[in-house]
Length: 113
Length: 114
Image 1 (cartoon, chains in turn red, cyan):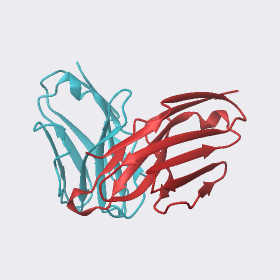
Image 2 (cartoon, chains in turn yellow, red; image 1 turned 90 degrees about the vertical axis):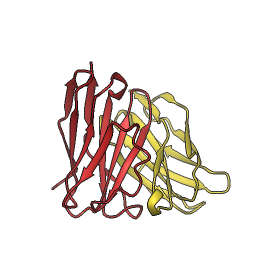
Image 3 (cartoon, rainbow over the protein chains, first blue to last red; image 1 turned 30 degrees about the horizontal axis):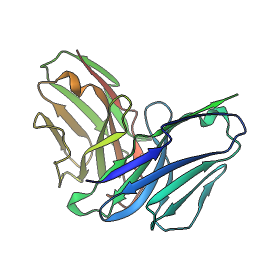
């Protein structure tokens, strides 16, 4: 059974800190690793990673995938209170009739002023 | 439409009643997905549609869950004879095609079974 594990489950930091969120995965016929940010209800897409070692960057957020060690990290630098959210990681298989996206339980990030 | 919409946003029902949840995907998106998120849990993948077809229904929690999609657009998730453990937020997402594009999520339906 496919599995995605995120750590830590929760994290409290002060504005300006840098945080690293972890995601390990076991996904049969793995295709990609996705990161989402969930503030209220609807998760919003952050990154899709398919290749090992290539960093994706968007402003203060960046992410990288290691397909040998089966993990990914999401970095947030100079955190702001608006970064407070649940960050979800998901492993996607390569499709066909058994297509599936398996989510981890998320990391709850709280950024205090 | 501008985004994925879901209705109702909240639903409170009594145990044993049937409920129907609706998802209206982004126009032109052929793939549609249903997820369930229970308190403190990650998103649980339930089912996906490519067009009107759902190739794999094994993710549905039990035989009192069913889903359909007609006209390649709106989808409904039906829960018959609801139980308290069905209480959760049900999220719908759509993408241009299965496994080839970013999934965009709707705001979800919060279902409470008393």
